[in-house]
Length: 398
Ligand code: LMR
Image (tube, rainbow, N blue to C red; front, side, top):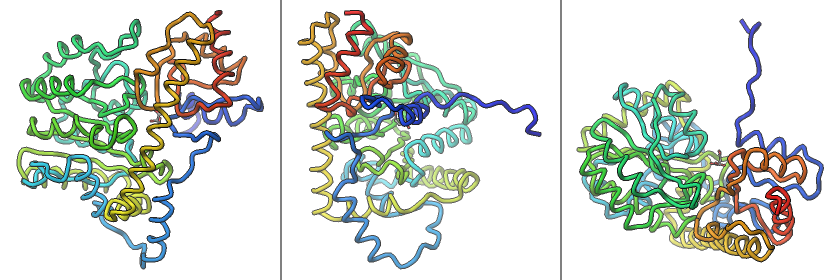
């Protein structure tokens, strides 16, 4: 049966981890996968996570199965955090959250849910969007289309074209948004623009689905949840996939959740039962460790305050790196305008390089970015930035 199998190329983002690890150049830089790094190039555990893990170790008495919803306290805390504790959908019992293996797991369960309850439904995602969205939705049997989003000429949002496209959507369609830190462009709608998007969703009747993988890393936890809160107030139905990988620096623990908001509590309960059926057929139950840690942090005032402070340090560092990088590029004599880097947010920006230039960065300078020239800004530091700018000047021929 395996006679004819042929290897397929590695995932465009994950493949870079191995290629970078195998490179012996001491100056190598990994600008690929979206992982936060400190000035020393490490991805440390947060102190609040280490403390909560100690509490967990001292207090847990069993590792028996938790059941389909996973860690119930985590589900409650994460939906209240994102929707806001006084959210009307929450008060009306119209929200259900089920823990999943990471944010990708949440997206896949969400895509399976869409395909199960409405096999004809299709999804529209921003152009461009996270590369894995392009594989994940069709992988679940859901057709994916795109709407205009990023203007490569001006490195900014094509807001009018986006709204025009959203006005073509209607009941039975799903439109996928990134709540903050748009991956891969680094450009998000501003609060007024989110309001127009929510008004459009409400007027046209399509169902918003939101990927919230970087909450707290753009402007702050409350601010970064704005889109979801607006949708939850204005639209009868909403799906969102959340992740604790980046904001709790718990990447490998795979802590995520799928949340559905339905028109009434009966429909919400029905959707929850279908989600449980989907997860049972796939992986039975989600892993508990990461969400149990988040559960402890979000239910302890001191640990939660510490988490918010540690998250702020990461956010400020990324924003500081954006400013420094754009200033240093301008001061280096490179003529092309890279000032957009400072105006964007989150981990990623497009450098506007051709695939050939990206390969030159890799082959001649041991600098790894995905072929789209998306860079992870959080990978820069004082000691690698100048080397990157030299390499950039060389491949730009400036
Ligand atoms: C990224 O886009 O680099 C991150 O979301 C990590 C991943 O799994 O691709």
